[in-house]
Image 1 (spheres, rainbow, N blue to C red):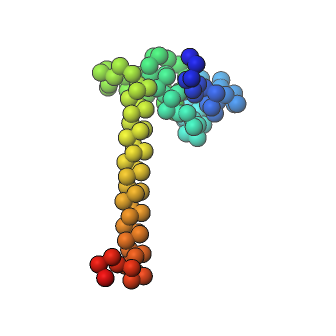
Image 2: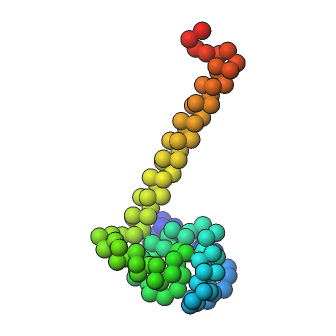
Image 3: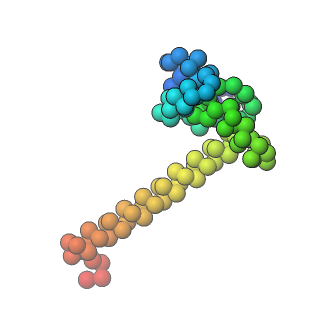
Length: 119
């Protein structure tokens, strides 16, 4: 396993009482909120889905929500790959959109200051 990053070391629950993530009923809502600020929520969720972990809140999802997701997507062979690819695609689209906005703003500034290349 040399060279692979272990997401567990960055998990927010590593420094808190992880037992609070293995609750039932309305307390699961609190556990899900705790997960919201975790930097490795996606990796945690993927792990729980790939390993078919039945109990607790993992990656901000309850066991009921994870079961429903697994039933809805029986075709997924690796949740880690699927979620990684989705996150990468999202970041790429955001970067592209930001670059386009920057180009438009730069062009607007050039025109506003009389630096239009056609002049």
